[in-house]
Image 1 (cartoon, rainbow, N blue to C red):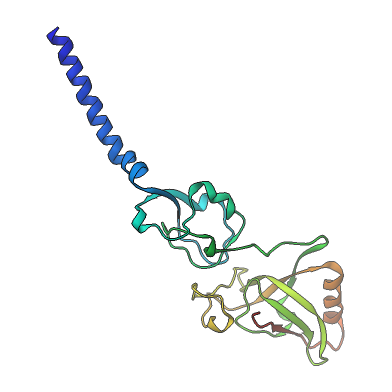
Image 2: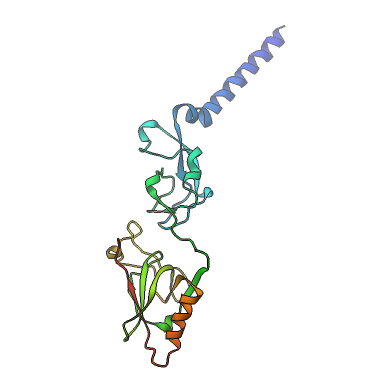
Length: 213
C-alpha cells in the first residue's frame, strides 16, 4: 500500500512538472498571447510573398499592432509583393503589401534591351517602372513598356540602397550601375524596336522614365 502511494505521489509530481514545462514552453503563449504572423527573415521591398516567409508567433495583446494578420489569413497575402522593408520577426498587416502587377498577358514575354542599343536612360530606373522608348535623334516613339528587370553588367538586379522608399526622387543610391533593362512586350512590338536598331542611321534608344502617378 505504501509503495502504491509512493508511485502515485511520484506520478503526480511528474505530471505537475510536465504540466509546468508545457505551460512555460507552449501553454502560456497560447492562453495569454494572441497568435499572429511574423516575418521569418527580413523581407525586402518588391519581394513576391510566399508562405515560408512567415511563421506563427505569440504576441501580448498590448504589443499587437492594429490589423495584425493572424495565421489563418496567410493566404490573403500570398502572391502579393512587399510594399516596404519588413524586418525579421516583425508583425504585418495588409498595408504592408501590394497586389502583384507583374503578369504577362497572352502573347507577351520579357525581352532584353541590350546595353549597346541604349543611348540615354535615367540611373534611377527600377523594376516595375514604365518607360517611353524613342529612337534618339528622330523623336520617333517606339512605345510605352513596363520594366521587368534592371540589370548590371553581371546580370544582377539593380536595387535601391534606400529600401524604405520607392519614390523616384528618393532613389539617390543604387546597389550597382545599370547595364541594361528587360521589358514586357509582345514579339511584334519587339520586332519594331529591332528594326530601328538595325537601321543604318540608328544612333541609340532614348529611354524616358515616366513620372509617378
